[in-house]
Image (cartoon, rainbow, N blue to C red):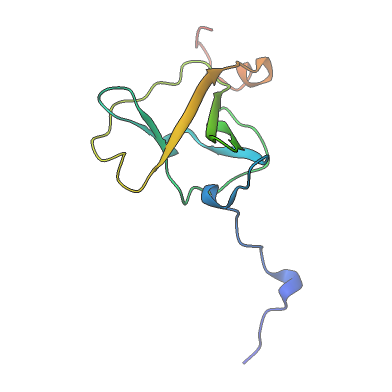
Length: 111
């Protein structure tokens, strides 16, 4: 049976829990969960992408934990009851809206 050469195989995606201190990437916004009291957690096996998107959060891994940057306006989260179980706690959240992402908002959306 023929085997696909390694050069033709898509590399395994880097996962959030594989990030080392000093590294950063982008994860889908739905991979962050919020508890009833507002504590935030990230899904550890979230694939980390290299490009920003209206649907992604920027995540920076530092010595003191994972720091999230919300780059697109109009993102909201509903509380999720089981977010603390096995998820990664978020050390900080900041809003730094990227004007390049505005053009990707659905037509008629107000900024």
